[in-house]
Length: 399
Ligand SMILES: NC(=O)c1ccc[n+]([C@@H]2O[C@H](COP(=O)([O-])OP(=O)(O)OC[C@H]3O[C@@H](n4cnc5c(N)ncnc54)[C@H](OP(=O)(O)O)[C@@H]3O)[C@@H](O)[C@H]2O)c1
Image (cartoon, rainbow, N blue to C red; front, side, top):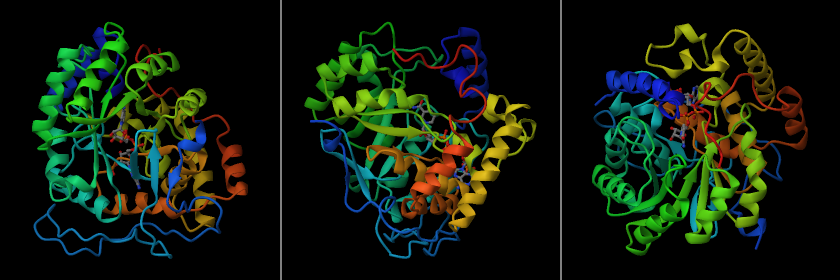
């Protein structure tokens, strides 16, 4: 359904709108580098086990005492590695957190558990939190803002503009400014770290969009400019007006198309945020057939879950799971470690509504993949998974 929300097809968008309304809960590469130690390269594999229950004392649900601890199962007790995105100084934890699932796409969720998950992520070293106006029209931003309010200045908050309430596109400068004011209010902050255009709007010249964000940066309301699902030409034109720090696009062991944009990112010095890095949950070993998901879960209609594709994807994940097990890791951790090993300017933002799963995902930063591991992964999924990531007419058009 989310693909329909993001579709250029009005009918699909209307269906998606109805669905959402119904379910709303209320220099070159060298300059784009990882900073600090990077445990996914150059040292022996360390066993990484599945996340266990938090050892952090918690009071009322969702409001635990915040205590920064190393990721569990990191035998070296290291803190999270940092990565630099772009050339403007944006530095974030190697693994971020995506909050979309708290309000969109994957069925019902519990807000308190969401807050607890975000706070646990921070305890484990995550400093990069992703939300959007689209994710509940302020509801998701409110939850993220509430969760991080004790440590707001220690973290990077990314949000996105560019949709209308009926899921059309609107990146006119006046709309961008309106969304920014709303986002500041919903998040309860006085600046946004990364302000992304969610989808390229063919009706709004990208130079005007970049110019509007530049003004917000000059005014101190925004720190960095990002684009989502944009193509090379748009990146170049935007970058010429206001340097783009980061491109966010779907990228995972299942979805490789974004690789065609990497040369442009490297040339311009733009970082990359991999969204849906766990293949919307398929690359976790916990999937079930499409019909068994909640009615509000987009995976009921996702092509990767449909008969014919589902079995082949399941088999690939089973084989990945065997490899992960030899390393004392889970398939989710293998999928995230693969992204980290791919390029040093990539930061995945897995989404989960569960404290235990965020612990598991964060521990992937300490999983080392050898060349032999990468080769094996390449033989299992040489070109990605089976089934399109978005439905007919909904695939973002990279312009
Ligand atoms: N720019 C864009 O257009 C765009 C589009 C989509 C997403 N995003 C961003 O990217 C973020 C991540 O993408 P995503 O949430 O779509 O997909 P994802 O991270 O690939 O997968 C999320 C799904 O995996 C499950 N999961 C996560 N960790 C797990 C684990 N260790 N074991 C088992 N299941 C696990 C989650 O379930 P539970 O929640 O039940 O744990 C959820 O159903 C979003 O939150 C959003 O911020 C951006």
